[in-house]
Image (cartoon, rainbow, N blue to C red):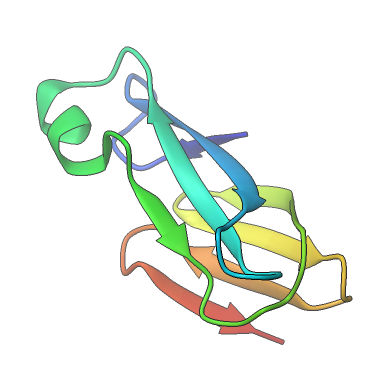
Amino acid sequence: MVADVGGAMDPLFVWSALGVKANTPLIGLLVENASPSLRAKYAGAQYQCPRPIGHLTITAIDGTTVHFQSSSGTVGIFDLSSQSWQFD
């Protein structure tokens, strides 16, 4: 999925995977065709979830807000701007 953190010309591709800690997912960013400043800020960025919630599925992205649901049923958001996790 694509996040809009720098405008329509600077997309970031957002991915999720299970991290090295048991049942703790990551959200990561892939920077393609972005401005040098965005590449410098986000290239290779990975954000480890603070909770062991299992596999994470990205359900939507709204600007810089990544919505997700986990295999354990946890629903929440990750804000790319503030790099903060919120759980419902």
